[in-house]
Length: 157
Image (cartoon, rainbow, N blue to C red; front, side, top):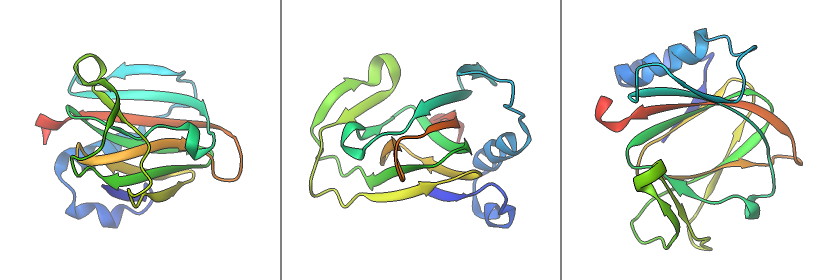
């Protein structure tokens, strides 16, 4: 998992070229007039997804992982918390849609040592297949947010 702010470019030198390219896309793409939906940038290898969602209580959001894609989640406007913990392979599946939609939802666990990442305008978080994440948790109350999720095929690294 990588966590940062789009305006702190000096920290990006340690990232792979694919991650640096994704962050540059986030920096230079004007999403003002783009609406909720998926926008393929390089076929199925790089997909830009615009999400306009309402955050909610943590207990209403499900922990998830992806196996074929890396998520680069970027907050355009708003506030949310994203839960994060490493996937140790011992979580119980709640809903497995890996074959159809590349998402596996896990059952709630009390002992996952989840860290909550605050996401405000300009923040990004990169989640790899071994990173369980729980997006769209409210920070101070329910809020409409606009965010981008860049989906990068794992075999692009």
